[in-house]
Each structure stands twice: as structure tokens, then as C-alpha cells.
Image 1 (cartoon, one colour):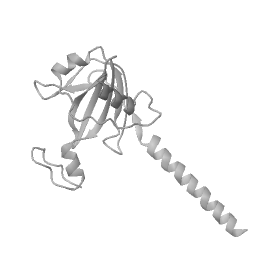
Image 2 (tube, helix red, strand yellow; image 1 turned 60 degrees about the horizontal axis):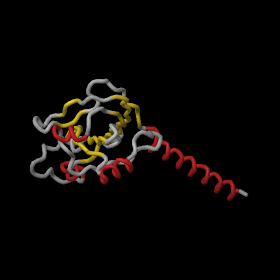
Image 3 (cartoon, rainbow, N blue to C red; image 1 turned 180 degrees about the vertical axis):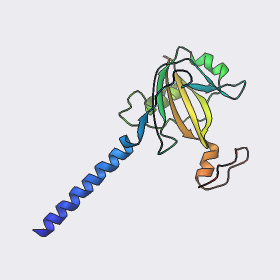
Image 4 (spheres, rainbow, N blue to C red; image 1 turned 180 degrees about the horizontal axis):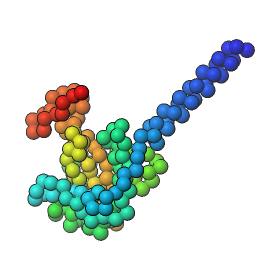
Length: 175
């Protein structure tokens, strides 16, 4: 009888820990981003190399302090991808990252498919939002937009413990 109680207790504790881990990964660290209504959506200008605000509506975003790549955003814009492509830097290697299922306006699979099929264009929103992390913005043909953060070339090296490659800004001091 004692063995069954101990085994049952181990199972209950394991399930509780598993549920806690799931909650921590999917819900606990995310916060809704409060939009400022002015420059929540920015694209990097071809002319200046600096991020510039574009017009947008219906902005929703989440972020987490636990990781710089947890940022996800959705919005709409009246600007066409073709017009934006003449003015702003087009992303060379966009890699939409999946978001939590409860943030339903953001869909990494839909972004990837639209980019592959030419129904969306990905732009560099801002390089080095945080060292080694770039903000990417995808604009769909129908005016929907989605944003995410992804690791850039410099970040790939530095986060692996290697020195920053040539052409990268100096890596920040480690704590």
C-alpha cells in the first residue's frame, strides 16, 4: 500500500510540474504591449538607414522580458507592399517565429506561406532592437501586417560565445 501512495504522489507532483512548465512557457512571461499610437510600427528607410514610423491601425502586440525574441505584433495598414518596397529595406532572410496559440492574430505559418507565394513582403523594421536581434515586419497584400523579432547574423555568433564577426557592432559587456 505504501508503494502505491508514493507512486501516486510522484505522478501527481510530475503532472503539476509539467502543467507549471507549460503555463510558464505559453502564458506566464508574456505581457500585452500598450501601443503609443505613433510609432509602434517602424520600417528601416533605404535612404537614411534609420527606422521610420508608418501609418497603421488595429495594433496588438505581446512581449516578454524573459527573451528578446518573444515579441509578436499584428496591425493593419493602408500602405501597399509595392510602395513600401521602394522606400524601405526588404528583409533578406525573414524567419517568422511561432507565437503562443492564444495570440491568435499572429500566425508564423501564414506569414511564411505568404512570403513564399509572394502574397506578403518582409521588411527590416529595426536592426538591433536589442543587440543581435532585429525586428521584422511582414506586410500582406490585403493590408495586414505582422511583426516579430529574430536573431541577426551578429547575434548568432555572439550568443554562441564567439567574437562578433567583421562589420558587427561591438558586443555588449557580459555581466
